Image (cartoon, rainbow, N blue to C red; front, side, top):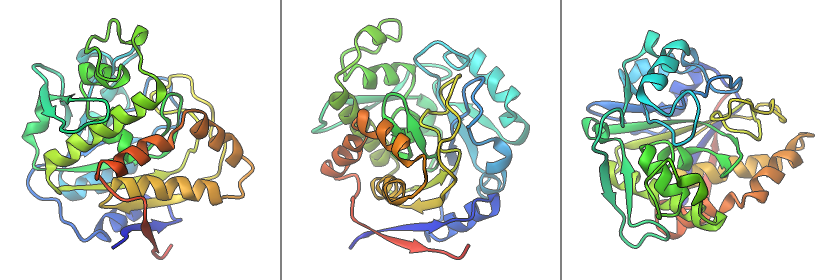
Length: 294
């Protein structure tokens, strides 16, 4: 059977709930809501007010992890300060999962680039996860969606270093002089994403918001303004199908900014992460797009 991917052109907080409900899977127990906190200075990230109804519906805890590069989110103290400035702590319980070590090491069997993934140990406090992604471009991965949220997003600072280096170092002080070849980096993201998928054993769901479509990520303090008009909301229980469907909508668009966005994706071989995740069995690139009422 093809994976089911639900789609609506309407982008509202209430529609996010509808897109979750369409999946027919009730996330149970203590729910982690994985978001992107937004780098200081970034103008494109999705603000907590947008996610508030959905996260409130599940009484979920907002989770994030620290970065491996200089900025406002590479230490727990700075990151929590930014979470407060951006309003996350005003509405939600917030958990930086790698605030304190040691990291949780997730074994990766038959990985393409990694033998293990390092995630914040607080992930062990949750029974299920709702992966809330702002779909957009990315300066290193080509694009950012559900697979990036699972991999780079859930990795600790050391885990991010391991992914970016293709498994050669956990040290954020040296990782940027040990970055992996692009294909290896994409494979490492697929490996890391799969380890989180396996960890939650099916108690996971995914929603991608295709708005503020910049070629740059929410991790960029200085990001390009969006180059395309908003497209809609997509949801699925399959992160591979979900990201593939988003890219297919980009390619099918007649928006004047389409080519600029595609150039970013293709110049970083962004499809490689999707291809590798599918090859590893973490999802399918074949899907049925189900249009819901706008």
